[in-house]
Amino acid sequence: MANAQGSLPEKLGIKTTAMTDVVSDPVVAASMDYTVGPADILGIDILEPDQISTRAAVSPDGTITAPFIGQVLVAGLTANQIRETIEKRLADGYLKFPSVMVSLLESHSRKFFVYGAVQRPGAYDLPEKVTVLRAISMAGGFTKFGSSSRVKVLRARTEGAGYETIKIKISDVMDGDAQADLAINNGDIIVISEGVF
Image 1 (cartoon, one colour):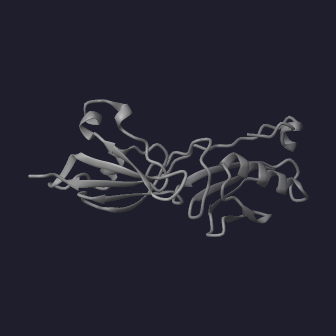
Image 2 (cartoon, rainbow, N blue to C red):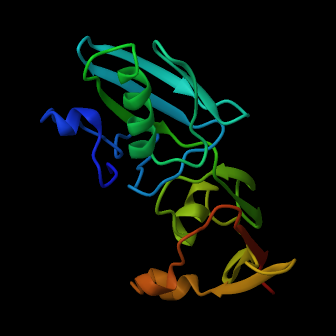
C-alpha cells in the first residue's frame, strides 16, 4: 500500500500493481500483511519500461538481490512495502517511472512443529491459514495409537518464558465446529499423545 504521499508512478498517473496472493505448488497463499523472512522465495517483476522477471531467495541476513539496484533489505516487510522500496530505488537514477510487482512464491521462514503420535513428526513450513487439523494432515495424520482426544498446542507466551497450553478437541472439529480448529501461529508446537487402551 502506498504511503499518504503516493509513489512517483502514482503521482504521475501510472498504475502500479502489487500482487501478494500468487501461489505455487504446494499452495502457499500470502495475505496482505504477511511479512517476509529468510528463506522465503519472492518473484520480482519489473513491468515497465522493460519487462524483467526474476526469482529471489531471501538470504539469512534478510536481503535479496534485485535487478539494477543490487541488495535490498526485505526481512520484516510485506510484498507491497518491498515493491515500494524497489520502485523508489529504481526511480532514483536507474529507470523512469518503473512499475514493479512483488509476489511471494514460497514461504519457508515460518515454521510449526508436530510431535507425538503422527506419521511424520517434525518441522513444517507454515503457509497462511493453517489450522490444527490441516497441520496434522500435513504430518500424515494420526498413527494407529494417536488419540484425537489428546491433542494440544504449545504456544510461546507473549510475556515471559514458557508456553501456553491449548487443548484441541478434534472430534468437535470433525463435527463441523470451525471455531474449535485453532489457527496455527509461527513457532507453535502441536503435540498428539497416544490414547490410553
